[in-house]
Image 1 (cartoon, rainbow, N blue to C red):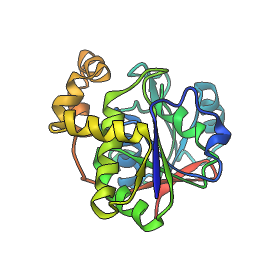
Image 2: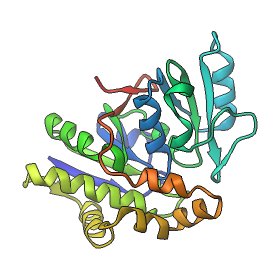
Image 3: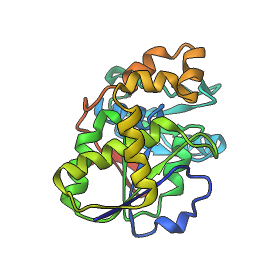
Image 4: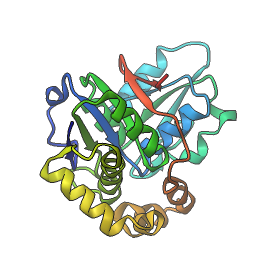
Length: 240
């Protein structure tokens, strides 16, 4: 079992993930929001790489069961029903609905890895559930951190490191690439208090400036969900 960590989706080629098992992480906030939406009964989440495509896809769905969700640079998009705060995706709002999601980085990272044989979404909130499932699969896997544009994102890499550490507790022979080793080292150095770490990251400071302090606290919660979003035919559903 071997794992590798990509620090950003920007330079990745779509076909590089073909046939692989991939875990996409965007802790602040797309991954956490997707997990929360599916846990609260959303029928499915459709990640898209552009606002235009989100609107186009939503126009082809009927019955009033579709919600547009997402953000650009932390702000909810004009005309969208929901932003990218996991606190918005309550069961009262999303149960039985299809969510079409566009975010600055997270949804784009998912679309980039769409040719993976297995694609899962991870965050701090479902970390143990994802680790347990990867151990059952017993396959090599890639971790794709969404990052922020072409930049390194501390919270995503620390989440990746913690995920690998959980797997190592059971499988001590898992092989790590250099980037995976670096992720584990960073998680040990900076991941002792997740909420403090996230408040101090570049992304965390931007969210604080835009009054999303409660989102940071929510996204820092560890192992509060057993839901594992799984991509099938371009649609994220809870893994059964």
